[in-house]
Image (cartoon, rainbow over the protein chains, first blue to last red):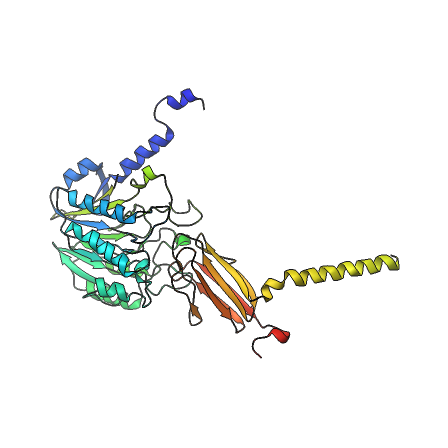
Amino acid sequence: MSTDDHEKGPSRRKVLECMTWAGTGVLWTVAGGVPTSLGIIDEALAQQSKGFTFLQISDSHMGFDKPANPNTKGTLEESIGRVKALTVKPSFMIHTGDISHLSKPAEFDDADRIISDARLDVHYVPGEHDIIDEDQGKLYRERYGRGTKGAGWYSFDADGVHFIGLVNVVDLKAGGLGNLGNEQLEWLEDDLKGRSASQPIVVFAHIPLWTVYPDWGWGTQDSARALEYLKRFGSVTVLNGHIHQVMQKVEGNVTFHTARSTAFPQPAPGSAPSPGPMKVPDDKLRTMLGIASVTFKQNEQRLAIIDTPLQ
Amino acid sequence: MTKKTKSLTNSVITGVVALVVFTATPTWADDVAVKIGNFTFGPQELKVKSGTTVTWTNEDDIPHTVVSPNNFRSKPLDSEDKYSFTFSTPGTYKYFCSLHPHMTGTIVVEAATGSITPQQ
């Protein structure tokens, strides 16, 4: 390719960047299980102006300081800045795990200090990085587990929506994927019993509850049983983290969605030798980190997820 | 073949045998290394004599663990952290990373022979 060719029109790289940008701002609405893209982010924000909104953040990895992002505190602060700048104040926040990198008290302290600046209630579930203290999760349960069952699972209702926080990072088996375990699945079955099928359900957990890429452990081995209990409901939204990138899949009435990390990106499935932290040029990092907001419109059974990058 | 060449061949063979014994020494030594990199244990399967100490080193930017249920369990290993375990009982030890369970490995421990057997 000559230099002249290079000057004509946008380069392939630029086009790809633009595609990435457009992709990050797409608003999805789901009506009757059929997702419809309504447009990019400005339009999406306008659509969001009415209804009940909550925020998802994920994978803060406080304490991580490797080349992929030596300043994870800074990018978490920027993420919380994004939350504070929202014109419509969310009702609360969920954090889908990996709050810390090594389950150290100082890492949890940093996360709590920065996240509390949003002045929102936060509902947590643990990631595998949050339960590697000596007592395998004691620190997490002391801080975030009040009123929860087992390793930290629970449910609550908000604005007519039933929220279920699940733990799929405990008692993992050699060669396996994420794991919910029998005790938690029995609890889930019981928790859903007697609920109206028209009540919207939001399930959140750290590792994806659908099989994204088993070679990298990106899935949950016994999630099929959980989904069996959920299939009679008309609107089910499953929110996960762990893979540090946005992915979405719709299966029947269930929408699966993963959020970006606030700390560092990970490669697309199979695109690298391992799922380890991905080093990108400094000026690209913030396009690959971010937050997600989710809006329910009452009486419309509609749900909109908007992923917003930091840059 | 003349007698002379035969004797030369024999000494070459002796030399080769000596070399094999010499290069095989690491599996008899007290220390063998396993590298944790790109979310894999390398070598994934390792044969050692009982009494051998195996040392895992995490070369990833993500913590890993080395866990063989009921046998041994490391603390989370941050980048460049090491964990060592001395295998004194022959057997097959399957292990994995409890954070990333798709990462698995095996250590096969064979009985040591002769005077270096630690069991005696």
